Length: 131
Image (tube, rainbow, N blue to C red):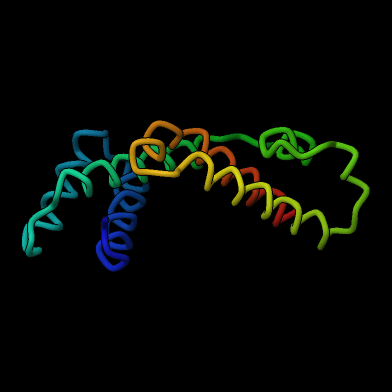
């Protein structure tokens, strides 16, 4: 398992490489370059984690959500809950997001496989929280 400090560094590199417009191969090169001095060296598990974070943020940045209804749909929340108070809507969205995140990312391989979906759900949650 990747420790929290290394995980945070890897996540930061993934986001930074996307914001700089790096391709997949440029991003992985950036990972190796920035972590070249770490001991122990970057593990296979950490490489997979980087790829997952890269895909999550790529999906998040590319997702276009233009309505609360669409955000609810992505998070699997019933449209009938739109009439709740704003604080209740946010609470419902957070509960839905984290429940699905935990189901979709039970292990590293699942996280990697569902990364694009997780990114869309993260964007939907952000939309609702700003709503």
